Image 1: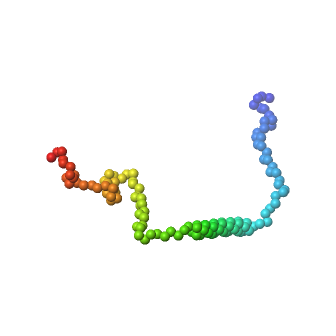
Image 2: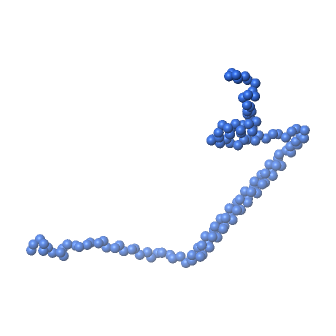
Image 3: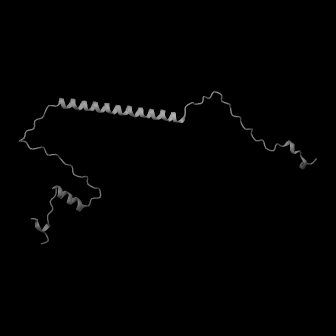
Length: 130
């Protein structure tokens, strides 16, 4: 027998791994609840949670109102003197933009009364060029 006439039965053609058998699980308890009943339970739990949160907010509001009433009762009544003028409240000007030009800034300052601009020829200083 020659090398080309070797016995093909000795060579395994394909040793594919045997499929593993799934373990049988006997202790599984199937649920006797329907999808609708589990959804209803979930919705009822969500409603109960929302009601509890609402009750907590209402209780907090009642506590704050009671605290305000106690604070108002504890403050002495202030009688304002009608002869004194009302206090002037400081009004903060608008924030200045980063890209504000000099002309815009000057106009804003003049409007606030922080700057006064005059023509050069109206000033009292003499010109060195005349």
